[in-house]
Length: 367
Picture 1 (cartoon, one colour):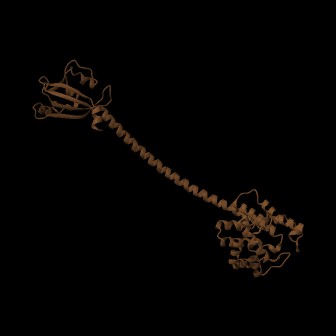
Picture 2 (picture 1 turned 180 degrees about the horizontal axis):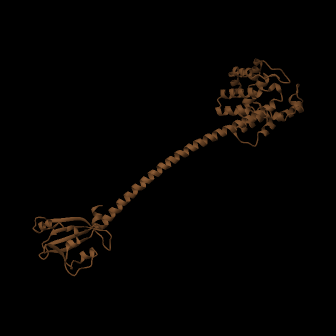
C-alpha cells in the first residue's frame, strides 16, 4: 500500500504516562487512549503492562530509555479484540519527552484497516488461486470431454459417410438395373450402357472435366435411354425403318426418361435427367425433343450424344449390321459442327484408340 493511502487511513493517539514504583502508569485523564481500546475509563492509574502486554519483559529497555541511552522502543502490530472490532491492530512507540510532569509519550498508530485490507488481499489471492486451480481442473475436464466429443464426431462422420456411400451405391445399382431393364429388351445391346458410359468418361477427361463430373456422367450416362422402357416392342425392335408416326413415338423416349428421373434433386438424378432428355439434340439445332443448339445443350448431353452414336454405329442393331471402326470414326468426324460439338469430336479423335479397345473389351454376349 502506498504512503498516501496509508497516511489517509491511519489514526494517531498520543498518551502521556508516568513511571511510578518501577511501573508505567496510565492515568484516567488519557481519554483518547481508553476510547481507542474501547475500555471504560478507570478511576485510578492503571499499569500499562496490564493493557499493553507486549511491554512485559521490556523493563531493561525502558530503563535505558529513561537514562537517555535509548531513544525509543517500537512494538509493531499489536493485536487486540475489542467490542468495536474483533481484531484491532496498532503500533506502539515509546519515546523520551521533555515534559517535566511525565517522562514519556506513547504514540499509537491504527493499523486495523491496513491489516484488514492485507487479510482480505491474502484471502482474495487464496480464493483466486483456488478458482484458478478449479478452473484449470475444469478446463482439463473440458479438454478431455472435448476430445471424447471430437472422437465421437469423427466416428459419427465416418458412419454417416459409410451409410451415405451405401445409399449412393444402392441408388446407383437400382438406376443401372433400370437402365439394363430397358436395354435387355434388345438382347443385342446388353453391354451398350457399359461401353457408352465408359466412352463418356474418356471424353470428359480428355476435355478437362473434374473427376466429380466424370463420375456423374458415368452413372448418369447409363440412364440415357431409360425412357425406352415405355416404347412398344413393335417400334423398339422393328427390323426396318420406322414410319413417321412410329418415329414420333420413338422420340418420346427422351421426354419419358427425363420424367422417370424427375422429383429428385440429387446431383446424380439431375445429371440423369439432363442426359436422358438431351442426348439426341444436335449442335446445329436439328435434334430432338427441344431443338436446342450449340452450347445451349448441356456439356454432359453433348458428350453422351457422340458416345451413344459411336456405339450404335459399331454395334449390331435389328435394322443394321455393325460398321467397321474406321467408317464409324470417319462418320463422327464428318458430323463435327453439325451433329456434334467440334471440340468433343476433336477429343474423340484423340482417344479413338481407347474407345475402340472398350468396344473390344465389352462385346455384347450372344444369346
